[in-house]
Amino acid sequence: MSTAQQTGNARSSFSRWFRLPAALGAAGLLFGGLSACAQDEPASVVPNSEATGAEQVSGENPAEATVAASKLAFTSSDVVVVGDAESASVIADKASELGVPGLLTSSESNAEDDASAESSDSATEGGSAAAGAGDEAEGGGNATTDEITRLGATTVFAPVGFEASEVADGADVVTFDPDTLEVQDGEAPDIAPLESSAPVTLFVMQDEDVTPAQEVAAASIEVASGTVEELPDSDPRATSDTVKLAKASEDGAVLALGEDFGSTDTFAARLDTARTAPEITGGGQTPFPGRRMVAAYGSPGIPELGVLGEQDLDDSVELVQELAEQYEPYSDEQVIPAMEIIATVASAEPGPDNNYSTELDPEALRPWVDRAAEEGIYVVIDLQPGMSSFSEQAKIYEDLLKEPNVGLAIDSEWRLKDGQKHMEQIGAVDAKEINETMEWLADLTAENDLPQKVFIMHQFSMSMITNRQDLDTSHDELAMVLHADGHGTPDLKMGTWNALQQDLPEGIRMAWKNFYDEDDPTFSPEQTMEVDPKPWFVSYQ
Image (cartoon, rainbow, N blue to C red):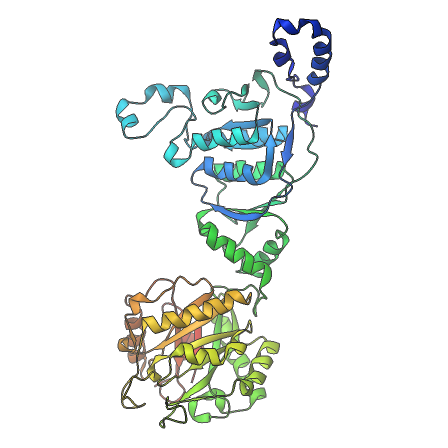
């Protein structure tokens, strides 16, 4: 029990009995005895031992943030500590000392003179400087009052100078010195020790200044025996450390405090993935920005299509590992090896299905995918669909795409329209078809509890992806990448690189391809990583 709990004057139900009608005087001794017993009952604080779920709040509105923490951490509390954002440290200290929830109001100032200084014009505009009442539209003081009511608080502690009566909802107000925390006015009740705890975790961003909302929310959650964790990234899927913290909190509730965590729906979905999906090479479940990838491109057994087909599986593994190692000195992020495997090959003949594309048997690629997983190599399945749609061909490789280390690439150069043949024109695909493919892949990823997947779109001419501005970049299950396939001299390659970035939808990263034969000269790893922006995925053909 805290010092304040030991020395505070007990607030009892005696006054209720004292106001009973005189007609009950005959039972006065009985009621007097009951009152004496009730007087010894300390105030109760009940943590929310069944807390579950995930919630995100921005923290800009201190009332919203501290109320959210209180709701998750406490079922009820006879006592609360309330103040404005300017006194957040004092509120947090007093709440910790008493072992009760702490709440803030939305306005930074709650002093009495602010209310008297308010002009009629500001009131007309909907602003109110009335102490602690807050703006109803912003959920300020009203949210605080509602939480005091929900908790069933009968005593509100507030620092001297804060007009707590505006938010106390009829509860008794006890004022304390903000410097010493000692009670100055009012009857301070004894508070019973907590008999349970709340399985609540507060996520905040590492290395950021502590806000008033964060300080008080953290105090409330720690009072309820919850935990406060500082994350190195706002996405709980991002690193092994964030995944570990997400899994450690899965038996309770999580409150993410800060705009960087995204909306509640986004954060909750990411948290669920972090708890259930396997990690990918290098740790975490998001390919970028925690790593860069360097890949060999081609098709097993077909040397004409790229370097990946010029040797067997063992030598291909060694090749991509050596390529990735060459890039490590030029990247602040870890560099992992990758293979981009052409699974459907553009064909000069229509073939039995009349689609001008030869689909390799998924089982023929299985040894490559399995070996890559063993070696920590990421695999990207590349599609050259001819007359087929990308989504139709992607479904052929569904079982491979269910592997955590396998992503998907679409090569619109080889997407034909009716009457077209390969090599007679550059193929093209509309954003609508790409969106359909992404939606299918995102659903597959979510339904199978998989980490985020790399999704690559190859392009070297603006005509290859029509209506590119309509690409749906909202799929959080996918790491979208635009792969610039320009070849030739450095000036030509940079011209393509820069052109492809014009009006590129937000959320799409850039990738670079080095050609052994068509480039003049082939960029070195150092030159490649000097490209601006530095590519996240580099492939060799």
